[in-house]
Image (cartoon, rainbow, N blue to C red; front, side):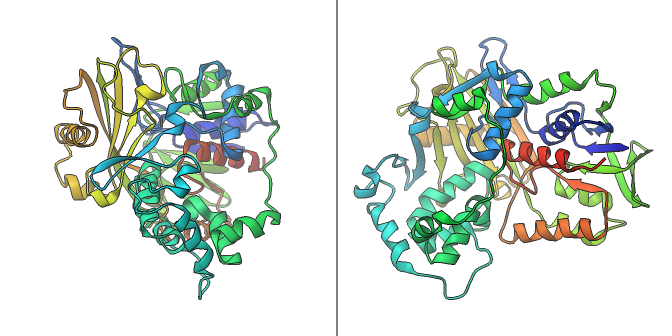
Length: 472
């Protein structure tokens, strides 16, 4: 049996790795269109300062089954000694900020926020809880709604504007008024619909049985729990994960990893897939696609236009990442993880991460600015030059943080169509997509960020499930 994996990002490489752990390993070929493995996971180390710049994901959370799965992978790859944990007691774990109402506001991180009025909110959060309790059940059962509407309905517009909307910008660079509540709060939403409130659902739904993902905990996982890790980074950058997978499998005769190998078309016939790679036919008994949904859509459009239309309907956004290094300490007035910008401020940047507050940056202040996202075209139009992106980042830092100095080192990266948007109806669309694949008996598995979560943890868990679920 031959399995072809399309895409050499973290999803495709994780699929390969988990296949390598199985018995009776089939012949596996991976095809990556670009000249490097890793996809959006990309790290660079400045030669002069030794500081790591991340152009994509930068930190991971050891939370839940997906978080433990990534820890398990890191341990199996033998790079657990490269983990740099950030404990819950660390200032970067405790201090989260939002720029709203034209100023930086520290988000409540303790019970004091429930009884005190803390900007940008006009009253204590206690009243938001009361609103949820007294709002009652929806008159008409809802299958889905935007996460903004859900939070505004249950807790009020201020919570939706200044708490949830900035968080959505930080997670997926999206608009909370479009993103499905099931993106973050699927279980909470379902209990709210069942019991008539979020708080009521949390109390009455405690006995609801939740399927557990069996994961055998190791000493490394227990270490993360016992030491209270809030998040962690990787020494020399997260790209060490895909790089180590490549190193592990390079000499394995069952695995073939190909760069500069663009897929041009996929057709299915007689329980077999025929993949056109750089003009040559590559037959396979099964295909695992970790490509962006819109890319896969183009490859199958001729034979399966209905499936292609569903895949095309998943929107993606562009995000600019600007890494900045100032050879000065203590440029930041407040320490913390960073500051997210409320969309109501109508600014081109989504958030600023305080890298030098999270890890040691050798006596420098290091910041990462995320820009654009759902509003990229609105703010940048046809001019998305590095100069304009950098200028917008520096203007934002000046206005928000009061830093007017020019950075000593900077990098500008524009990641086109990098994050899929789980808009209202997304989960139903994914169900239709997978039902189509099943009903038509296509030898195709769908991985990557478009289906089971946009985070690195989500993608790795999805890849593990795909690899373990293949029958051969």
